[in-house]
Length: 156
Image (tube, rainbow, N blue to C red; front, side, top):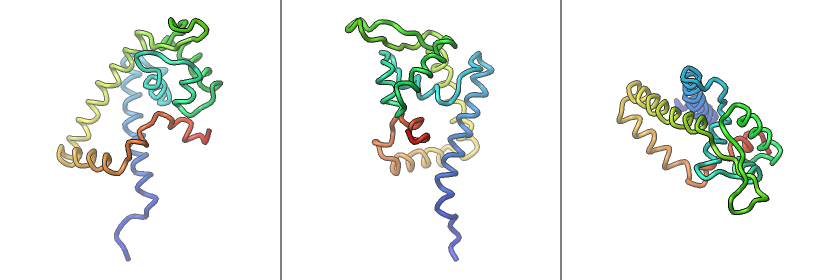
């Protein structure tokens, strides 16, 4: 009999590790003035990027419909994280851009992730964490590094 765990445990452990980091991130973001931010919003902020994007392009990047992207934009606009402007290159298009509040949330997220990584390093050991990160780089192809996880998870 093999002492190896069953194959299904690996993706679950990776997911649980991800969930642990994201839950810790959001608990700290709430303390730092961003109580309404949800895990999905991080993907949206990254997809909007520094130059902004349209609802259609946001939906495509996230792997969701234009309507789902629009609903998320409406929520984030109501919460003060994004705003809409006319595209200076094409006045028919509306661009979604991060507000100062959205940029603050991203900056705080980066700082919190650095702290969480340091905590994992202390728990696992710096060398083991670096080895884990390197191993994940080896098995996770660059093509898998996309922001369409919201649509992928929901089957959209």
